[in-house]
View 1 (cartoon, helix red, strand yellow):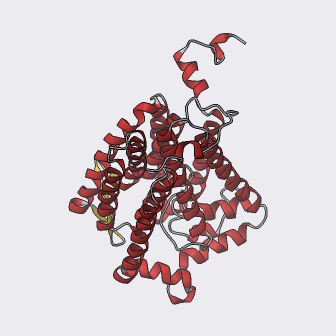
View 2 (view 1 turned 90 degrees about the vertical axis):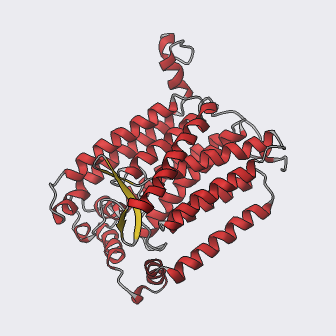
View 3 (view 1 turned 180 degrees about the vertical axis):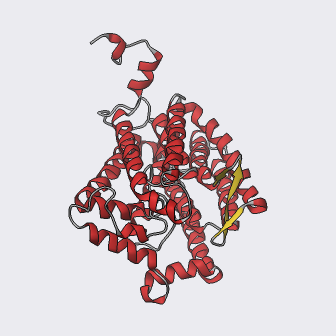
Length: 385
């Protein structure tokens, strides 16, 4: 094989390509391709119901997917040491965007999470998630290198700015996700356990406050705990779709129960997968996600950079929780929460944010050798703050 196409090549393109986790890249592309298929079969009934053209959602999805994958590729070209600068700009833009939703945002189901920019609706909080994770990792790792640097204090300040803006929207689902990931990162960084306990306490108080002060949150939790206590139409149809799919599925585009699920192209696309592709393929899809996340976490456990380990692991955990919430909601294993399935669900902001997140992950993991044997997390977290 010519050196031009091998790791020994002097070509910048080949050097970039061989430094990436190519197995993860192929998994991501496979998920993205399957997502196009699912949006193509699930979105036409939704479009017809609201008076749009049959493939309007599909056209938008393909456009946003191209932007998402383009952003992912561009970000992977940056060196890991430059990633925190990208996250800084993204955090500032996303945080300002979240504030703008409070002033001039569009209210949907009691929450103002979207703003219109050049005719497109944007959900800034989707971009706040990955930016916060990377910045928090940077400051936590900075304190590890320089004990006089107040990295933990700065990270806690960024956390307060982020969740404060989210609660005002309100978006308690996103707040829970960010709180869980931040607590895990603090634990991995070797911070005193009291910080983890404090964040867990804040999360518990937030959920309690949301339950007693917001009717739609109380309704969702009550319907999860006591299905007969209120309307559970979408969840009931979701479970029916899985049962109708059986072992082998009804076939692509042949689902009938999905026609009765209002958000089947987005928040409940996993239900359409279960009906049309059956248990076997649905289990295979879960395995692809599990393999991808496991592989990425494994690579970061071998990283010699505390920043890369914390940021990469935090981003992967963020995507894992998002995936679990989507699948768990569709199967009534968790209270219903509108979260998309990465690269499968229809979306604009969420799809692009997922592409950015995977781009950050791939960039942070560049150059980590698969067969390298090290002591894992412990060699990075042994020293306490």
